Amino acid sequence: MDIAVPETRTRQGPPTALMCLCVVLVVSMVAAINLAIPSLSADALHPSHSTLVWVVDAYVIVFACLLIPAGALGDRLGRKGALLTGLAVFAAGALLSGVAPNIPLLLAGRVLSGLGAAAVMPATLAILIGTADESARPKAIAVWASATGVAGTVGNLGGGALLQTGSWRALFLTVAPIAVVVLGLVALFTPRLPGHPRPVEPVSALLFTGGVVALLIGITLGPSAGWASATVLTGFAAAVVLLTGWAAYELRAEHPMLDPRLFRVRTLRANSFAMAAAFLGMFGLFYVNGQYLQTVKGFSPFLAGVGVLPVAIPLLVLPRLIVRLAARLGGPRVTAAGLALLAAGLVCVSTVDSATGYGWYAAGTLVVACGCALVMPTASAGIMAALPHSRAGLGSGLQGMTRELGSALGVAIVGTILGTGEFGAVLGTAMLTLAGVVAAAALYLVRGVIAGGGS
Picture 1 (cartoon, rainbow, N blue to C red):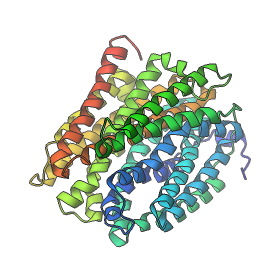
Picture 2: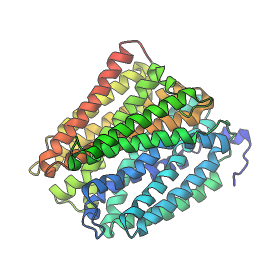
Picture 3: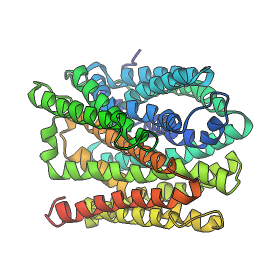
Picture 4: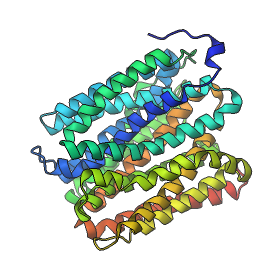
């Protein structure tokens, strides 16, 4: 039940730490599960390689595709209520995953957790924006955006520690009660804010989700079934039909979930693309981290989690500097520089093998993190600035969707390439592929926005 808080209190300062804690909780699970892949591979459930990709992506896809309708529902029914409900559903999904006796129930738990996470993310940013003064909003957005990056490191460290002391099930069975505790803190300390009623479009959400799932089915089954097989071609064809149907439905809808015409706004389109590319690169790398450090370098799960600590340094240190840098140079220039740096880090990681020292690998991941630290706050602010304040739920849902779709595509691309041969032999190809996509996003910003004078 929401606690009524006078407007004067809500304006005294946003509950930044608590909202960031919610973000870290749901986003860290995207990274933590990657360290569990070796343990899952050896488990009695005997998952196939493509199944492992879906154990990771089932959560991410639902998370990504339902962010915008969940944001709309939160705008309509109340952001705090949406946040509390999302945390409860997230906890239930984690518990189901932890006790699942078979792969279908494990995937069902991941889907349920993703549904909860989709309700959590847009509500946290909408609450921050709704409680922050105008002058404090850029800083609040930057801190919130950096928390999404720090969450990856928290997931790696926490997941590594849990996997060190138990099986992959320990990860889920520990997260569930943590989510319940966070739910209690939100109920006690988060103010109630007025909503902005707007319709929710379930048909649009189903078409979009179905299209993305069909696309990833085609990508993940390509190596095993053959790229010209009926299954793969059907997946890609279904993706085209469903996503085209989604766009047509949205264009005719009186109250669209995500009007495709919004992307006529150059800065919105460019920042969404940049956000997706950044997370594609970062979480594609996270999918590799656990396997490389454990399988190739012989690290324990905990040491593998510690091994990605360099990623946390720029994500913790740089946000305040980046806000000032973006104010001086312009957000698009900082974003493009971040993407270029991220691509360079992925190229560096592509050169590692079993004989490579950990220092070179850590240097590559540090460069990737510096690039992400430049992109996330500037792209987040760019997306939010392109929409009116009354559409805060839509804006936060849109940037969350681009992040998680980028993550899902990064995992699918890397997982698909790794499935084509021995890990060490195809690792370089996977990283160079990610670097190429990120570099293309940087080039788009330079040619389409910066050169065109966009801000």
